[in-house]
Image (tube, rainbow, N blue to C red; front, side, top):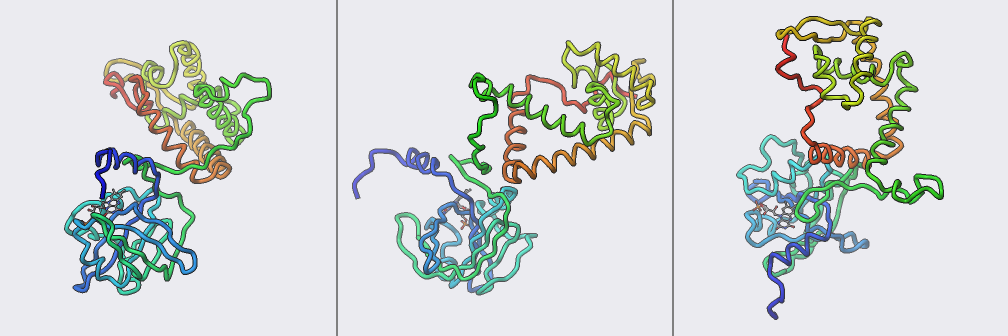
Length: 328
Ligand SMILES: Cc1cc2nc3c(=O)[nH]c(=O)nc-3n(C[C@H](O)[C@H](O)[C@H](O)COP(=O)(O)O)c2cc1C
């Protein structure tokens, strides 16, 4: 063969631009020992008969077992099975330790919780450079409608369908806003909050009161400063002070002196009941929104937002983190 004009690193990177799912492929050796490897070389081959292929490095420990196995099973992993992918990509002694495994055809170990599981009969094996290509005829499959794990450029990713192309804003509005992250984050929060307010018994609470009550419910006995620093903008401090006074008056929170003689605020039993109602409404709104958006997209959106919060935090304290000044 001719020498390529690129090095192997460049070739790997180029292959990484092809986004794939992730599979774990298992078989059982003649000695009864199970083997399994993580593989993204899986591909469909033929519909009639139903054929699939994958390739295994000749250096893999499990090679001899797959070379001899009459059957193997392909597990297309779900988005929450990253640990399983890492486990079978390692060279650990017992990759199956403490896993819930069933026996399939030819006693092939079958794993659960994946998107799709195919039991295959080995029909061809081909030389493929430093890999062996296995072609299997699919003899049985089970499928579940759960989001898949994705592999892209050497990293795990999540799959989400592209958003509808319908415009977000009325015709004539600036295109800038439609694509501006600040607008999108604010608008999404606003829609969520409006819907939640419809469901929750909070017509008697201002936004600031709502924010304080729900923060104290998760992290009780906070100082006015502690609360302000974690959930309010500087410009909202006066509003926050008014909201604290109003919540005290309504009997939803109470006040006592902390260790450093700082006033600390906590929720009363009535406040807890109210907060539980809010939590219920928030959960119901979430369920409703996720239902409209689709489970995959909901998972992908949460994943992106978590990354966004971690990567862009300019050093704000966690809302439920108490400072030294707030000890009782
Ligand atoms: C996402 C991902 C995809 C992989 N795909 C393959 C593959 O298609 N073929 C392969 O031989 N190794 C692949 N590997 C590496 C093997 O899983 C790894 O070398 C494993 O340790 C082999 O197991 P064994 O040596 O116990 O047989 C992949 C690893 C990861 C993380």
